[in-house]
Image (cartoon, rainbow, N blue to C red; front, side, top):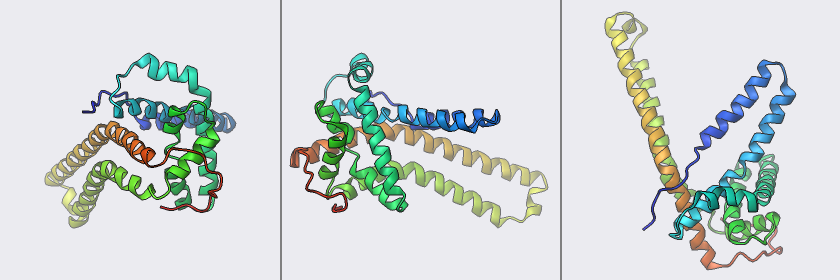
Length: 242
């Protein structure tokens, strides 16, 4: 039985830090430093998925977790490799996204096994790990996408449905309805319901994220058993199967 006592770093914190790094220098009219800080933070934060993959791969294999070994030890032993792997992944995904958004999204799934491969094989180079992930994910990208939907859709649909209800309520009543006391009460009730829906969607998202990370690790374990991640350079970048 897999336990979920995992270390969870909400990605939203990364975006908040990046947003602050962008806004604060701009307020001081320093766009150069704003862009520089955002790039540095985004690159450093890129190793977080590798650390999360390492942690949840141990959970998927029913191994005990140790903060010093799984975080500080990983950073000390593999931090540079993870940084280079993250950097290469971001560059490749960005270049594919220049074509259209869809190719970039597809490549995110193609390269999604890279952190697990680099964890299992400390001798493999970041670029070869990306190539191995691309080979491993042939024919599996849709399956992983559907797996993600199981965890991502519930909080998103809750938020979306609450937003739709708010729009419907506001559109059904004329503006004069909100002038009196009853209107104020309606606005307060609607606002409270919307706030509850937002909080509930956030709670569900936080609850599902560790489970999604473990599911990713289990997915890797399943497809790794089909074919070991030997790098096959004969598979061109543009000939992939879903």
